[in-house]
Amino acid sequence: MEFGVKSGSPEKQRGACVVVGVFEHRRLSLAAQMLDQAADGFLADIVRRGDMDGKPSTHLLLHRVPGVPAERVLLVGLGKEREFREKAYRDCIAHATRVLSGLGVTDAHVYLSELPVRKRDLAWNIEQAVIVAEDTLYRFERLKSKPEEAPRGPRKITLAVARRGELALGDAAMRRGAAIAAGMKLARDLGNLPGNVCTPTYLADQARAMAESNGLGVEILERADIERLGMGAFLSVAKGSDEPPRFIVLRHSGGAAGDKPVVLVGKGITFDSGGISLKPAADMDEMKYDMCGAASVLGAMQVVARLALPLNVVALIPTCENLPSGRANKPGDIVTSLSGQTIEVLNTDAEGRLILCDALTYAERLEPACVVDVATLTGACVIALGHVTSGLLANDDGLARELLHAGDAAWDRCWQLPLWDDYQEQLKSNFADMGNIGGRPAGTITAACFLSRFAGKYRWAHLDIAGTAWKSGKDKGATGRPVPLLAHFLAKRAQRA
Ligand code: BES
Ligand code: MN
Ligand code: ZN
Image 1: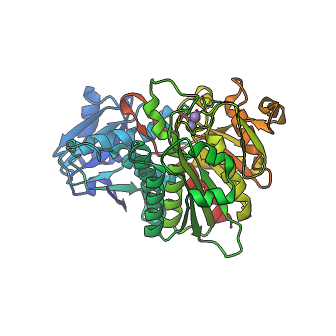
Image 2 (image 1 turned 60 degrees about the horizontal axis):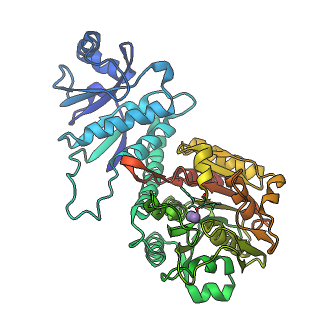
Image 3 (image 1 turned 90 degrees about the horizontal axis):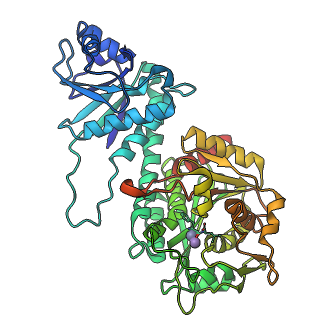
C-alpha cells in the first residue's frame, strides 16, 4: 500500500473516496461537519434518521453526495466521543481499511487521522494509521496453491493533516510508520513460515539477504564456529536435531566508530517440541512461533537500517530446533555454558534460556551500551499478562523505563515484573551451578533470573513475548510484535546520542 499526507478540507477533495468519522449520539467529527456544510445538511440528516448511529465497527457508504466532488463518502462509526482513545482510534482505522479493501476504489482520502486522541499528537495518529492499515491488509498466502481473492482497492491512502504547516511532521511520521510496518511484515512472514521451511539455516539465509539488501553487516557462525567458541548450553539444545544450528550476527553502524552498541538478542527456536520433556500434542504446531523473538529482532534491524538511525546496533540470534532424539538433552544432564557456569537441564523444554544465556555471554565482548533480549520464553507470561502485554524484566531501572515508555509510545506495550534476588533461590541445583527451571511459582521471573546470571556485566533487559508474538484460534498468525516497541526504543536512543 502506498501512503501520502495532505492538507486541505474534505469538501474540496476529488478522487474516489473521502473517509470521515461519526461519533455516537449524532456527533459529526470536524471533517464530517465540513462535508455536511458543503452538502447542505445531507449528512446530519442521515445521522438524524438513525441510518448511521456512530457505533464502533459500523460504516455507511454514500455515493455522489451533493456539493461534494469526491465520488464517495465513507462514514465510519467512532463510538462515544468521551471514550475515543488509542484503541478506538486504531479500531476505526482498521475498520475503514477493511471496508476500503472491499471496494473498487483506486484511492482514498482518510480524515480519521485528524481525530483528537487524548495525550497523543498528529505524528502518533499518522504513524499508527499506517501501521494499523498495513496490519489489517496483511495476508500470509505464500504456501496456498491458489491465492485467495486479492483485496480490490485502494492502491493509495492519503492521510489528512489539518494545516499545511503540519505536512513535514506528518510525512516523517508516515515514513516511520511505513518502516515499522515493513519490519513487522518481515517478522510476521518469518514467524508464520512452518518449521520445515523456516529452519535455522533458512533463518540465517533470510537474515543475510535482509542485511545485504539494507546495508547491514552480517556474520553467520556455523556449528564448528559455535563449538570453537564453547557455547555448550546452546549446543546442547541444537544437538537433538539433524538441522544444524546457526549463530547470526548483524551490525548497523550508524553511530560514531567508538560508540558502544545497543545489542538485541532474539530467541530463534524454529520449532520447540519440548525435546525429551515432550510437549502435549494439542497446539504443538504453534511452537513454530518460538523464533518470533529472532524475527522481531530482524524486523527491528531492518527498521534501523531503513531509517538510517545514527546509532550502533548489533543483533545476536542463536537459532536451532528443540527435538527429542538419541542425541538430545536428557533431564538431569549437566552442560557447561560459554560463561563457564554449569547448568543442570532439569527440563529440556526450558531450552530458550539455554540458547540465550550463551548469546548473553557472547554480548560481553561487544562492550554493549545495553542489551535487550526478546524471547517467547514462558507459558507463565501468557497466564500473567495475557495476549495484550509483553513481560519486561531488567537489571537496570533506567533501561526498564525506556522500554516501558517506548512500548507506550508505539502502542506495543510491556509491563515490568520484579527481578528480585529472593527468586534466585528457586534455581538451586544439588549437582551444578544452577538448574534450568525454578518450579511452578513465578515462572516468568525465574526464567529471567536464570538469564540475569549471564547478564551481570552490563545493563540488560528481557522482553517475554510468549503472549504477544502470535495469535491463536481463527486469526492464528504472527503479530510482528514487539517490532514497534524496539523501533521506538532505538529511535529514542538515536535521538539522545
Ligand atoms: N517456547 C516455550 C514457551 C511458550 C509456551 C511460549 C507456550 C508460548 C506458549 C518455552 O520454551 C517453554 O517451553 N517454556 C516452558 C518452561 C518450563 C519448562 C519451565 C513453559 O513455559 O512451560
Ligand atoms: Mn520449550
Ligand atoms: Zn521454547
